[in-house]
Image (cartoon, rainbow, N blue to C red):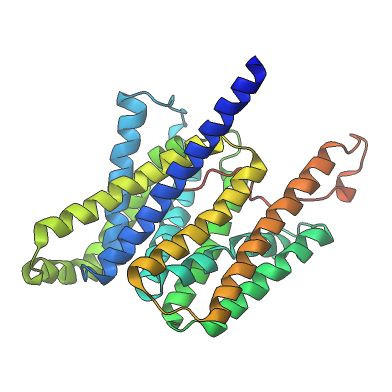
Length: 337
């Protein structure tokens, strides 16, 4: 009886964790799109910089003041040798995500982001010469096919936004792969990751943001009518961007790997649906089919990875390393930023 009650509590906790993760994720995406489209604040570098500043402050408060998570100490030389390169790729990843959101619909951008598992596997195969089971490659076929169908049938296609989203996938994959080597020996959670990387990302992006978008931002200040409400929305999006990282930490520690994978793909579907309800961007039938194929493919890919990882555990310790199945460095339950 007691075990059943504990199981019910764990289930409720997992459901609440997933719902708050969905809520923060979808809200941040919708708010960013609203900022670019409705507020006419067409400055993705500045928006990204605001997010980094809010995340830096939020992580400092969470660790130093509220002590929600203990600080993982990093040697000063490792901050520049390991954290800084990761922060640079992290910065590129976030900026390209916002740039793509500036030019293409949320539905298209979210579908393209689902291509990240494929780019991770391909990069590891091409650059690091890692071997993957044929089932991994087979599971990526519907992902690639769905992305191609979605891109061909996208009614609001923009080449610049599409390229930004695709390069953003490469940046995400690169960050994941580099983390395996650069952060070796450090067990970072999402809050500590933001604590160390967000200040570096702010430093990296602040000068390009001022040089490229500074005059445009100043002009927007003088020409936009409802400046105070707009600034509140922009700042709130930054605060919620930090809260999203905290929600990822909560959901990872409340769900299994399979649940996390399925919930992540359903989150994309929720974001697509909500964005369509708000912005009413045109979506053709074949475009919706392509998006569905991509999400199903991502779920199948996650299942195959989990299955292979379970089989790898059962391998004999005497099995030669060259014969063992290699898994992509996208962890079963990866703490994303």
